[in-house]
Image 1 (cartoon, rainbow, N blue to C red):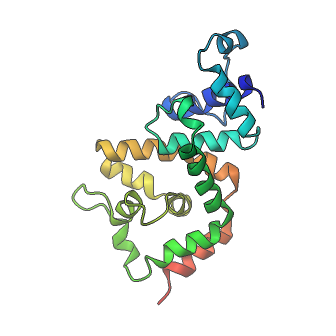
Image 2 (cartoon, helix red, strand yellow; image 1 turned 120 degrees about the horizontal axis):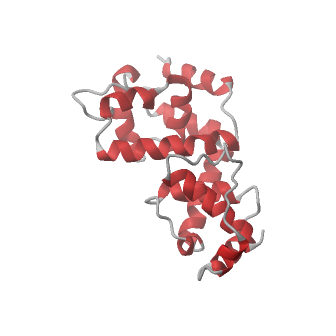
Length: 200
């Protein structure tokens, strides 16, 4: 990829994560930023570096997971270092062993009453969400569980207005289509969830 292409991808993913109106997938990852606008940027060489590191298929996911991990104001210069590369590498490793990682997380819940884990009590975050906050349960495992159970929409009705939750929920909604675009969630995952959560 050249620097301009990397810039367009960056702009599209940034708009997706930081605005309500732009949907990366609805608009096919396209923005209207011109070559002239790009050439006037003082940081254009940073985009040339990124374009050499990631191809057209990889870059949107690299950007998305770094926006997910960041504060929503991810600067292009921060995307060139080892931290950003490691965030993406860890994400790829999870994706390449989705089934194993999901089972591993679900095994942590076997000793618990799952029904009680997903209930918001007295306006407090449910225990399952706290486990995700604490990174005891993988973020992507929650994406898969949410796909079948609509947990986050139910939680939002109880937790909306809480700053930590609102920030999490917004990012979650923005990130989820990248997860399912990378690899879908078919019924084989549902079987894993059901089998794991009904162990005796």
